[in-house]
Length: 133
Image (cartoon, rainbow, N blue to C red):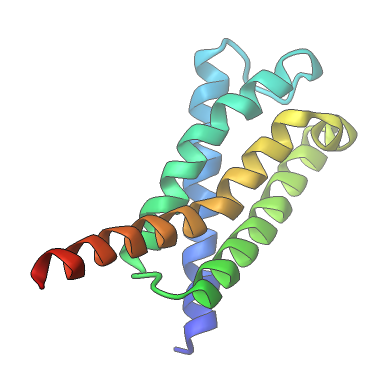
């Protein structure tokens, strides 16, 4: 399997886990569908577990270069956009989804998670190397 194919596969796993987290948050807020009144709040709350899921995925995939971090962030975010668009279309809330600022927090969290992991990883490695000398 090529590296980018693995990134796509892991991306769909990230999407599935984010959708499950979003569903659990939605149910915990007393809503089982994409209601326009609470959609922004649900998406905003979902951005936190989405960031953690993508961060852990970047950790497990050993994202060690800027190119890998950007590629994975873009692929995973594009897949998340598709996943949420399909779900929103199913619930007839497509326009409400993309009019909600919370959606952009959610997509941004997944986009930035591999980059945050990379910069944290680099900072830790620099500190380890400096302490060894």
